[in-house]
Structure formats: structure tokens, C-alpha cells
Length: 104
Image 1 (cartoon, rainbow, N blue to C red):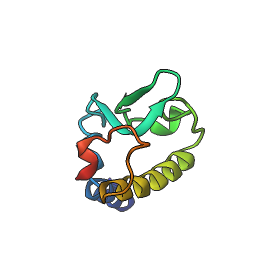
Image 2 (cartoon, rainbow, N blue to C red):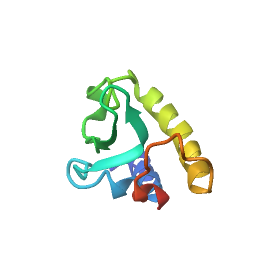
Image 3 (cartoon, helix red, strand yellow):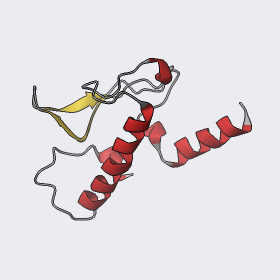
Image 4 (tube, rainbow, N blue to C red):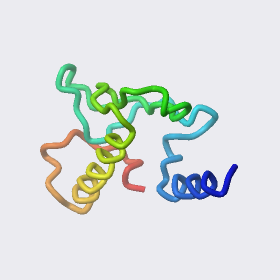
């Protein structure tokens, strides 16, 4: 791996994304509640998507609502702020349950 790729892997591991995105396909193939709810099905758990060949699999997210990886990163940046507030005692009454792995 190049130095840039190695740095990216270190950041990925430090952020603990490997708790769900691991193995050869970078997915644990499990359902996780990440604070989203599908309004059509009222479902709040979604399978961990593989990260293999990610740039070739648009659109993204369970509903296909993100057309670019930049949109996905922006979503998760805002989402993690919300998760941190909720886990620190904020109002979670409007959110679906959060997966315990988000607490790590």
C-alpha cells in the first residue's frame, strides 16, 4: 500500500469503522441501527454495506439518496455529532435505537 493508503487505513481503524466494516468485503453482513428510519417500511436497522469498489456503486445509503461519496461523508459527519449528543444524555426520543457499537 502507498503511504497515503496506509494513512487512510490508520484513520479508518482509529475511528473504529472496522467494528462493522471488516473482512475481505469490508462488511460484517449484520444489521445495525444507526439512528435512521426508513419512512416507507419503518425499518431502523440496515445491513452493513461492503466498501469494496465503493466508488463504482453509486447511489449510496439504504435509500439511494446520496449520489456522491462527499454527500455520504457529510451525512456521517453531521450524524456523528447527533450521536455524540444523544450518547452524552441528549434527547433521544425522536431517534430510533442506536447500535451499541456506536458507543465505542
